[in-house]
Figure 1 (tube, rainbow, N blue to C red):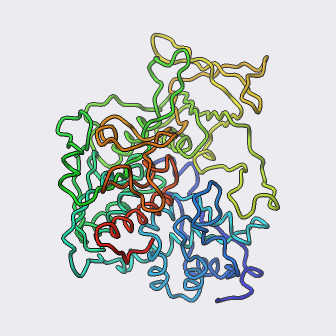
Figure 2: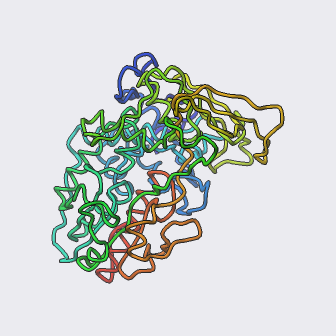
Amino acid sequence: MGKITGFLEIERHERKYEPVAERLKNFNEFVIPLSEKDTRDQAARCMNCGIPYCHGTGSTAPGTPGCPVNNQIPDFNDLVYQGNWEEASRNLHSTNNFPEFTGRICPAPCEASCTLNIDDNPVTIKTIECAIVDRAWDNGWLKPEIAPQKTGKKVAVIGSGPAGMACAQQLARAGHEVHVYEKFAKAGGLLRYGIPDFKMEKNIIDRRVAQMEAEGVTFHYGMAVGGSTPGAIDPQELAKQYDAVALTGGAEAPRDLPIPGRELAGIHFAMDFLPQQNRRVSGEPLDGTADILAGGKHVVVIGGGDTGSDCIGTSFRQGAKSVTQLEIMPAPPEHENKGVTWPNWPLKMRTSSSQAEGAVREYAVLTTKFEGKDGKVAKLHCVKVDDKFKPLPGTEFTLEAELVLLAMGFVHPVHEGLLKTLGVELDQRGNVRASLHDYQTSRAKIFSAGDMRRGQSLVVWAIREGRQCARSIDGFLMGKTDLPG
């Protein structure tokens, strides 16, 4: 341990943001990194606890404390404090293939479970993680890790989101021939087409893809597997061609709001709106799809989670006249009861950077009807609800709305096409049934990981499952495995 009394002497300091007026002018990242000295000071605050809950327990239960990929947080904190950044990078990458992703968009359950969070001053773990990997890239430390010998086995990975990328990279490093099939034009899944560039610029993904290609991973773009898209690959034929197949697509079926007026123009799913802007930023064509734009409009976002926040930030950057966010859940408390919640992830009021850009937030609100004019949405009819989601008489109100974005989450992966053709069993929630023990589906040699298996979740859980799925596939193909979990 470096500075034994660091947590007593040094206050928590987090990364700053560019001013709202400046950052709304573009879609660039706006987080201002700490200096090297400040980052080392923040790392010195780590207490090197006897039982570091920040590590994570490996459990899959909701609210489980700590890091899902089991990052060795006290270890890399100490290495940063000592100035040994290259060793810190090696340590960090031993558990996490893509810390530059998690260092930008993970909600940091590790910080919630930090012992110092008992008095609301956790170590800035996410900031330190991001500083380590960004320094590693800047200094050229992240070279391709090419397997010394090939196994002769071929694996297909369907879906190139964080679960698919992690699975593919681990399998390639084990010496397998890995082919990733992606229906869109570029790799990354929701990281590329869902997360706005102001949260993570896409060159961050591109450099990892280049590393993976140098390690032997082959990416096949514009290649849908299953379904009726022209040129779609038959998944049954694909399964015959490979020694193992990993299903690592997303939970893409969105939760709808089937109320009167839903057919009006101007009401869209968040995942019809967000990918368009990402494509505009990257210069990728929209292929004739009608523009969904917030400029000059009163925008209402229905759904209070991260996707809703992404819609808010994107709408403001497009020039929205106003943005209101509706959440059916009651407003959470400003502060959690530490004695009850710590070290688990607490329910408490959080304000995202996008929400802080000027959105009006309304809680315990149910939308009952959309009202239109000339076939286009113009108003929302809403009512306040109690803790059982029952409407409260006399609390009805209307909101002006020219663009409505539905950001209420996703229910399960799309069943038509790939999953129905393969005939894999689904669980009671409509996700692919696969055991955490080996990630095998009901079909021989077909595995599944990430959101397609567990449902809508965090990028860090996708990376964890992709790594563990790769380990299971390697053991299945070779009879044993040396891949880490």
